[in-house]
Length: 130
Image (cartoon, rainbow, N blue to C red; front, side, top):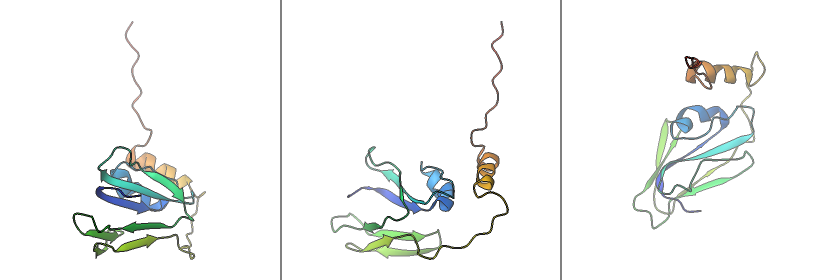
């Protein structure tokens, strides 16, 4: 599909909470085997964030009709210019990074989003005076 907007974030669940959340994307537990595609300021309301299987292959191309070149940034560190006709292919690695966790896999994540983002935390309302 061809889209217009300021950018596109493609992330894993463990990379979803920061940049992805800031542009309206979902928070996804780290144990969910998926990738997230979240547009940044899309030109249409119908281009919404999507969660796709981790087995997907995503190709992002800069069409020859684009007004400007593109830029790809990897985890906020390395960036490359994408010229008209250039593309980037994103796939899940065949070699996952081993992680040791002392608690059940998602338990720390739920605790973290509650404490740091105040997720689903609210002040209890006072009853109406009678």
